Structures are given as C-alpha cells and as structure tokens.
Length: 109
Image 1 (cartoon, rainbow, N blue to C red):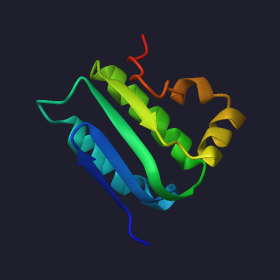
Image 2 (cartoon, rainbow, N blue to C red):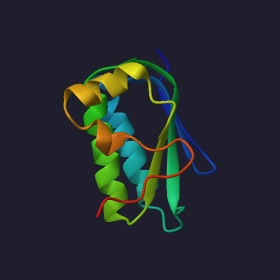
Image 3 (tube, rainbow, N blue to C red):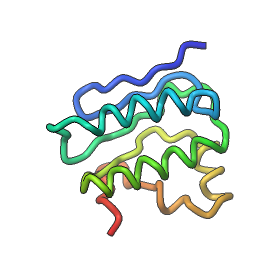
C-alpha cells in the first residue's frame, strides 16, 4: 500500500494508511515541515485519500494540534473520515479535533 503525505500550498494531503505502522514516517515528515522558517499562519490537513485508520490516528491529530499551538499556528482538518471522528468521540477528544469546514481552528490557548 502506497503511503505518503504531500504539502500543496497550505494543504497537507495524507494518503494511504493512517495507522501505527505509518506513524514514524508521518511524525518525521510533519516535524520536518514544522521546522521551516516560513510556515503559513495555518495549515489544512486533508484526509480525503486515507485508506485505513486505527486509534493511533487520534493521537496523531492531537499531536499536530499541540505542535501547531506551540508554533502559534492554526490547523484545519478536512475530509476527516467518519471512523476517525467516531474514534475521537469514543476517546472524548472529538471537540479537540473538530474544525468548522470554512475556517481554521485557532491555536488552543
């Protein structure tokens, strides 16, 4: 299964599995991206091409939110799969990853 993440403008497009096996690669890629000097004020993360999800995906979304807050940047998650939202709700963190579809979520204070 091909797995990748690609930044197009201010959108990070995640493709393939979003699971425990893909976490090291995704953490490495997104950490490298976050170290850039000219980061946009917000980044949208698009899950439209994600093919598989497990509970580690919830932890990854929360990690991204913490990292964005540390950098004083905003995030917007788009095309979040229903099963990922269900997992977030099960763990009681759905409000931490929910972003209105038309705007970026501000960094948590």
